[in-house]
Length: 111
Ligand SMILES: [Zn+2]
Image 1 (cartoon, helix red, strand yellow):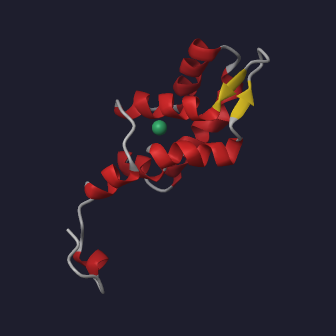
Image 2 (cartoon, protein in one colour; image 1 turned 90 degrees about the horizontal axis):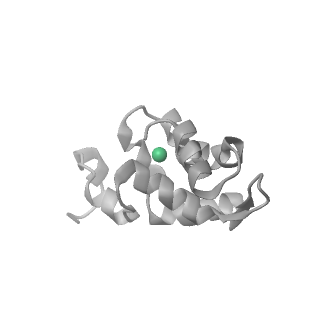
């Protein structure tokens, strides 16, 4: 799912309310598209820690326009699963980053 609008539509189907109720959370999830158009932008927030970071940003729940409290973490977990098919850890991402020599400067061989 490439566009945050469609993530928001999916959230409305799951929990009710309006697209606008969810759009800020999905926009925040994909905000890293500002940094790069490469799909690896997802490394920044599309992982288990990103779910908890979203709670810090938006609170544990949002109240949708149907006056229903929806857990933020569930919204973000669904976003990640729609994008990746599962919820990786941050470590899953890092272990799959191709290491360039400049990244190792001053470090012992860790990998
Ligand atoms: Zn995304």
